[in-house]
Length: 155
Figure 1 (tube, rainbow, N blue to C red):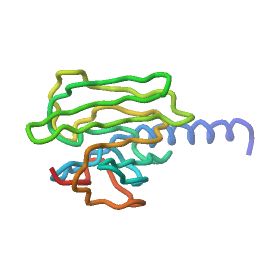
Figure 2 (figure 1 turned 120 degrees about the horizontal axis):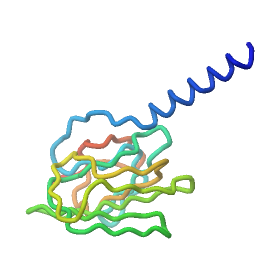
Figure 3 (figure 1 turned 90 degrees about the vertical axis):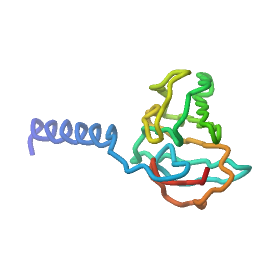
Figure 4 (figure 1 turned 180 degrees about the vertical axis):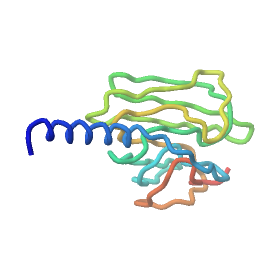
């Protein structure tokens, strides 16, 4: 194999990974409070669910409930962002944290916006963790694999 062929394979491989990594598949949004992200349930404690986002997971986050964005807090030094969504029934906080490699937590909504459950609210580039709270009636378990839009608790 000559150098030109190796370069072509390398560029093709990088392009394929870039397309795969940046995918945003359509999801059927389920009932109840839904997961804001793909990943594995890392911890359930004090009405809080922590989700680990793996390198090959979808890195977009979705609104876990329909409601109004009442607050967005950015903590650049901690590579963290908090989004608070209020519905007539419950107020939910989505906390997004980038990992060591991820230095970018992007938010696609603003305070005052109304979002439908399942709406894309942001993205973590090379994301690491997302937490959602309070979840009083979780129906997921630690180490369970979940997808964004999948029910994780009841309102």
